[in-house]
Amino acid sequence: MTLSSPPPILFARVANNRPFEERRPERGSRRDEILNAAGRLFSRRGFHATSMRDLARAVNLQGGSLYAHIASKEEVLFELVNRAADEFLNAARAIPENLPAKERLTSLVRSHLQVIVRELDNATVFFHEWKFLRPELQERIKARRDEYESHFRQTIEAGVKQGEFQVEDVRLSALFVLSALNWTYHWYRPEGKLSLEELAQAYSSLILRTLGAKAP
Image (cartoon, rainbow, N blue to C red; front, side, top):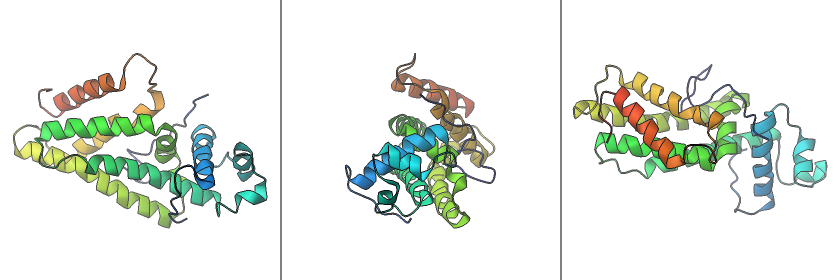
């Protein structure tokens, strides 16, 4: 994940044009239904263009009834962004740290793409709408971004030390990798020419060559 003002990496500026605190519900709850609907609406229309009335209509609730489940639209946005952060972080944490650098980076690439494809609506909101959170909530997301980035940065740094990668600036290299990966949400379609595995293999090969390593 990568953020700044303006955000360079994990939060892109192009909208998805496809046809408060953390109170995590059990899957299948009414609140969860509202969050899923919000993910679809925010990803297509944007946060500001989606009203609470739109959200209530999407889940067949009266406007007043919606507030029995959520406090504000910003609370919904924060939870959607935080959920996406959970998915990215959990995927990265699950990859063993003692893998050879090339293997670990390839796994990070694959897991990142898997999250985008699996959580396409939330990932779109995550990349594009996070900037509408108030500053203190943005800072909480940025802290999670920094942790996620560190998985890529440390892996590339290890590869340099092991002689597997040839790069001069590890941080810049990590940002480059994440930039390439993050744009995928805007154009990739599972029913398209490339399967997810083919896409992961192609990206891994390109990224490894760019870092001065031979593709596995």
